[in-house]
Length: 213
Image 1 (cartoon, rainbow, N blue to C red):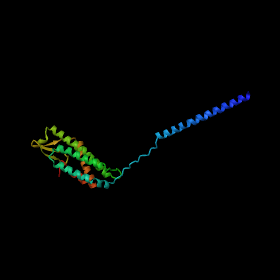
Image 2 (cartoon, rainbow, N blue to C red):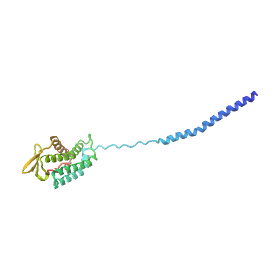
Image 3 (cartoon, rainbow, N blue to C red):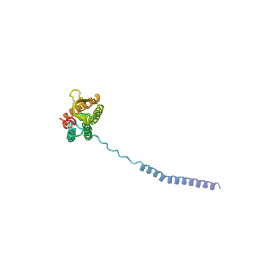
Image 4 (cartoon, rainbow, N blue to C red):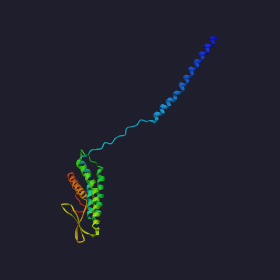
């Protein structure tokens, strides 16, 4: 009886051991599947290439800017010879400078390798804004004097203080503009001409669309 009881215990232990091994073996594919699924969900990312900007010299910038400056010169000449009012010519000049800046800013300039080109672009952009602002200020000053464009026969700018004069109602009248705006406008024109001359891009600064030479 004792021997039979021992044999039964041995058989029971073997059965439990076999059940555990089967359970462990059956769970293994599921674990492998989870690892494979996780690997599929997190693919290896390839680093994206970075574009390193090319630093241009002043000479390289000037070479690439020649055609745009020629185009700007032609546009300003057309504006100067047009029959548009002087107020409209200021607005048209602002658009021409803006278009030139849009083109030339794509060439790029570097503070270390192309300082003149950077100054040139800075003043070109400034004039695209200042021409519009200055023209609007002159129009406002004209309204203050109760003048219209049709009342004006001649335009002039004094050489010393850059006062804008118009001949209307048989006399010269000054269109008063904020001094800060006026100084910024003429300073930007002078700075652009200086940078353009040194770069060999005089075409970008030779034509005055309001008072052509």
